[in-house]
Length: 64
Image 1: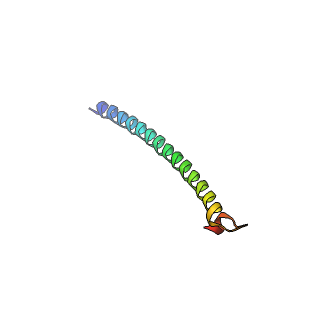
Image 2: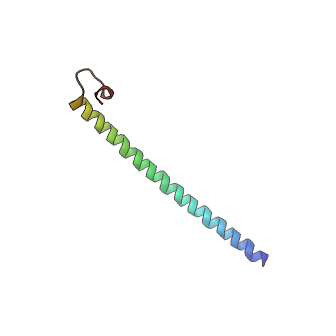
Image 3: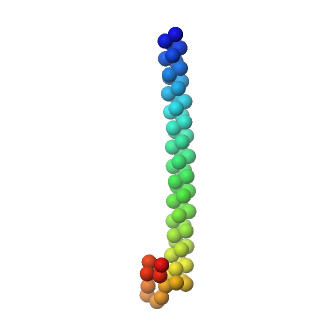
């Protein structure tokens, strides 16, 4: 019976390991997409502030 339990534990470790790899891949992929969208939004926001909200010679931070 212990050989069956050892085999079951090995299978369990492999399944958990595979799940963790998939989970890490999905999370890192999501973070990359999120960072890309956030940086793109910030660039657009800065251009908008520079064009419409800031006075002459002000940076976008001053306009905000």
